Image (cartoon, rainbow, N blue to C red; front, side, top):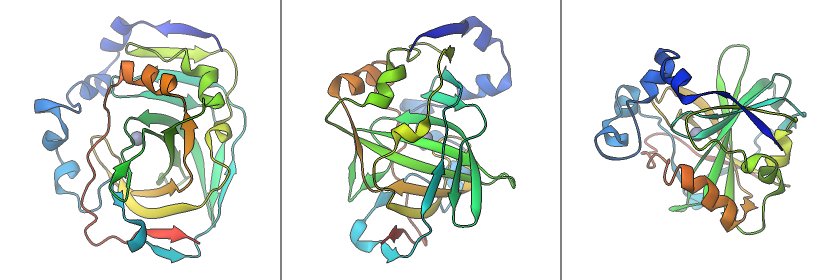
Amino acid sequence: MKARYILPVLGLLLAGSSWAEGAHWGYHGKHGPKHWEGECQTGRAQSPINIRTGAATATELPALVFQYQPAGVQLVNNGHTVQLNIAPGSRIRIGEDVYELLQFHFHTPSEEQINGKPADMVAHLAHKNEQGELAVVAVLFKVGAENAALKSFWKDLPRKEGKLELDQQFNAFDLLPADFGYYAFSGSLTTPPCTEGVRWQVLKEPVTLSRAQLHAFKKIFPMNARPVQPLNEREVKASK
Ligand SMILES: [Zn+2]
């Protein structure tokens, strides 16, 4: 998949406050997670978490119904991750609730831990409903066979801050594992401002990517995972 470089770095630096804000936080040192402000410090239902599978409540959770379709994609290096903005039309249905897929992006290692262990990478698929409520689906990646869905755009990962318009459509459904069993809990954005009230679904079944694919991402972002946060009073549910 070829991509066209549409916005130079200088343009982004001048592009406005939302980008400028992003420059003030990171994953290391004095801009690292310990120093993130606001809800990141005061929240009681923060993400990510360590999912202790033995402590999760097995229950009849609503099936995740992915109504994704091929869509135009904009590939963005925002200085914290590589994000793919998805053109409208892909939705997820969770029980009665319908959310539109806005974007997905990656963290390495995975921010979520399962029984104290992160996976090699995670994709966060971020959705929003008509009320403005957010639902994120996390797909865990482990090193193994090459990932064909990633392969279609991985060589175009922007190494510097900027945006690319992919010249062909992408179906986010191709990122998903075969089984949609999941863990569910209430959490937050994992980046500042760490806003809570986010509905989290972490798929149990990981997918694979090759060591070379992982390395290609790590060359741009060697570590972009927030540490796990206290569970506090929250319950983690597991689909049966
Ligand atoms: Zn994320």
